[in-house]
Length: 340
Image 1 (cartoon, one colour):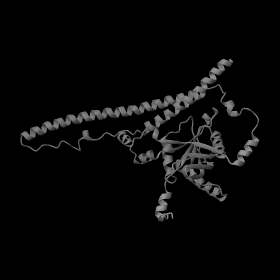
Image 2: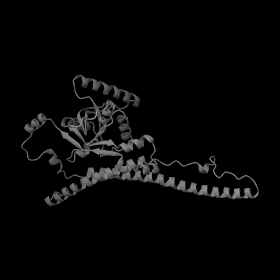
Image 3: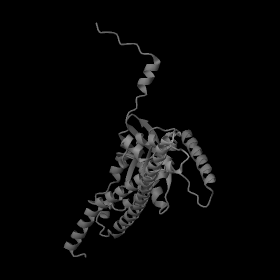
Image 4: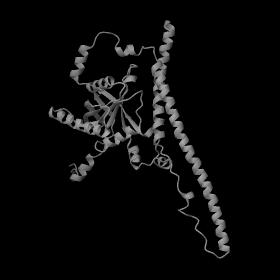
């Protein structure tokens, strides 16, 4: 006979069920992608945001619906925040009444040439993840999408970075202790666009017999100057910002080295005085004086800004490396055909 299964208490069963499954893929409905693209393109060049709704099932985060946030200019920040919160609650109530998925799984936002790695994005992540553990942010770049690709990516903050960010300690010693590099801030989750069987059948019926689509023609555009110029312009600006951050650290280490030299000189002088006092039979003075301004620690600048700027530089370099080969191919094809 087989042995009886061990009896587990309710607390043990609950602890077993709370095992966190890592997020592997973000599955977005095709209709949601169209809504995001439409909202972002219609509001260009303004940057827009919206709410993502769906289900969190195991290692898959399903995004089944979305709605845009209202954008109102010229109002106070407090008023805009209050109106936005009321608008979200009203939309969630309406969706619940019509039996549509109304579970918040994150938000989407548009970006300009991949410029999204900012402190504001990190703070928004922290606000969301206080209540939603596995929320994501869908980043859509309308300008990159004009190059014949769907510039859509899903991001989330790494758990190690969130833990470090809550301590507000981004000094070099703490970062080395946590083994935190600039690549460990964001995690990019693979995106999968899925359609229902009914939508797929309708799209098959609507599909034309043309051998080429609009995306194929977009890839043949020979004008590469605007996209490359903007990327290089932003890259140069980021390099300037990174240089300024490095100057801050150089200034800090110069002051630290100067302070350590002054401390050593002061200690040598105090020890010489104590030797003279001991020879005279007097009580020696303490070598450490907390009231002495020489021993006041110099605050070390935060490395968060330099980490974010380095991430942004890497993003621009990847965009240039990904687009430059196609641009050169188009140019050589144009030379061959006599276009240039």
